[in-house]
View (cartoon, rainbow, N blue to C red):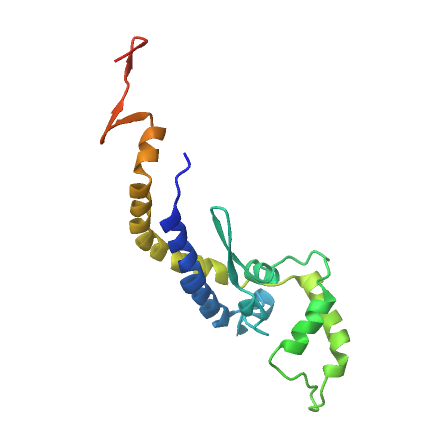
Length: 191
């Protein structure tokens, strides 16, 4: 059945571009427990440099609508195990540079010149200890699903109205004028 869900797709795309990205940014900027058991009591937002939030966009692929962004956002959300896989050092150096903090030692001297070493140490820690999950994407989905369920109905109804003839014919009905009839088989004969 090739029903065109034009209104439903437009609703979902608009929801993703507006509310879903907004919910993402709100959750992404909210302080939450970070660091797992090792650093219990530590809270911080997922947002650091802002690159992840700025990377968000909505893409459509046929009937699919995708919210896409920097790949690392998934790992920050779900966390990682210390699996001895070393993260991308260039990405860590960029993150250190873009992070809105000053890197100073206890005497107040800048550590910016030690960025390569710091990126290596952070990478080593991630490869050994992993990243504690922030669980912010689940929070976004739990917030959005009831709104989607409440708002999608009228768009689905409109799409069914616009495709009713196709639906009826695909179900086996025949259209004669403004009426639909179906042939009922009994004992091998059509009635």
